Image 1 (tube, rainbow, N blue to C red):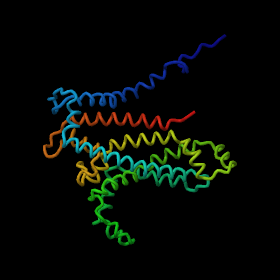
Image 2: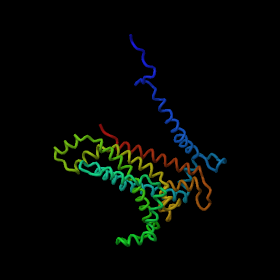
Image 3: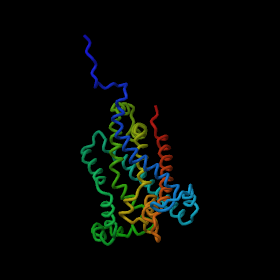
Image 4: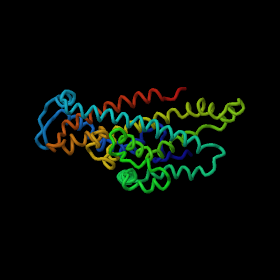
Length: 306
């Protein structure tokens, strides 16, 4: 006699999975999709809370035609691009180097090195920024640097318009380098040992193994890390706030899109101090478009080939 099928049995071809996805979909719509769409809607209005006036695309036009607004916007855009490039060249390149070294077959203490590299990531950004602000202050660091023969480095780097953005970016790279390193480590560990053995038989050296085997096989991970860096850098705010201020001191040299958006849309631009949510939403909408286009380009360039 045939036993009846269990009612709770999971059917691979069924649609039961939707019940597991619903909570995630709900939170995504409420906390991400709706705010995004509402921000785009708000960019078409001007005024303050409870007193909005529909102006169409006037905020976008004013952003690119008002000399003061456009000057500050273009300056923050250039600084953000420099900030992103520094992270790509320092944080992500070092992340690959560290990952390759950690995953070497004869590497001892790899777990310890992974922990040391990842520890800064667990620090609060405000705490990290404040501590490095003290370390880069010659009043605090001069004696310590002099004791090891590096007194020449005791300069007010954060007060110099030429170097302030570089040091803020370096501090950010130091804190977040653990994330790309761990992602690259995971990607490298997924490469089959058979491939390395074939390379050894073929007489390939370490550089050839990296350039022709490791790097092509972790290319999709490189793309993911690039997109994450791109998105995070274009939304960066807290590190500048902690080490400089929301005006991107000195002389707006560390002003990023995140700080510019905050001054315009939330805090209000000095000296008036009245926030313009519509203009802030317009800035955020343009940034969203840049992120979408940039992410699609990176995904296309780094997609895995069959």
